[in-house]
Length: 257
Image (cartoon, rainbow, N blue to C red; front, side, top):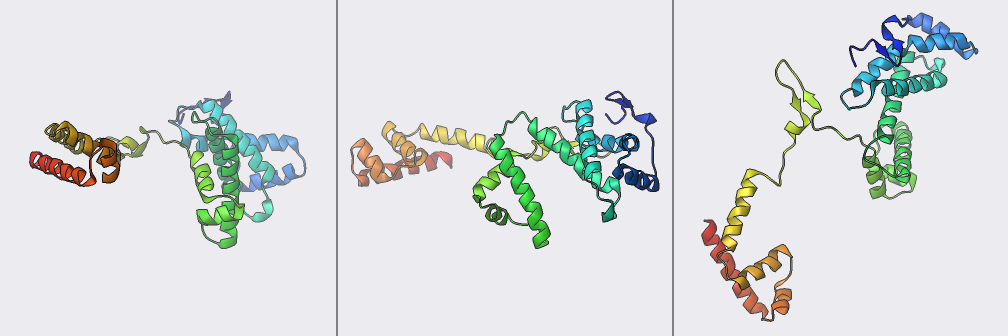
């Protein structure tokens, strides 16, 4: 995408470049209703759209689609730009374009999220923005939920549902050598070699027990039942269960040493 000259039929190499003073003058004419200048202004800022959508390359999205969505963000920025704030148009437009692209990616995500959950998430984001200005700091999730009169868990779930999924093959660091990808930073704590070996050892040790001992340990430690519940289930006393359990554990310890 970075080397692409033509996108959506637009030859980006031929796009006009305007200086800041020219753009401010054009904005005044646009606010006065000059549609011809408006069209020229939009074309003069398409490079801005192109630079923004390059941030989203590598996600498998069609560059032309992203460019069109970015153009919508550019037009929205132009329609809502207030010259009295004294900021550059590009400073205001870039977050608008990024927001529009992110919205598109969320709404077209293969992981489908219900409309009500998305609406709650967007409301939470708006509430967060208002509270940030009021409190002059980042509000907590509890503060956001209270302001919305919604449950904290509901707000957390909604905000998590609109997070963009990260590809395991997305690079997180790159120098002159090989890139480091997300998958290189993710460790599997459940299926490590150590735990795999431990499971085999436990299985071998369990095989040394009598069927009754094995059954008792299974329902005690894998099903989480109490000694009283085990005694009732297999028809013996709690004291007998305790004795059989201790003997079984002692046998397994000898096998595991």
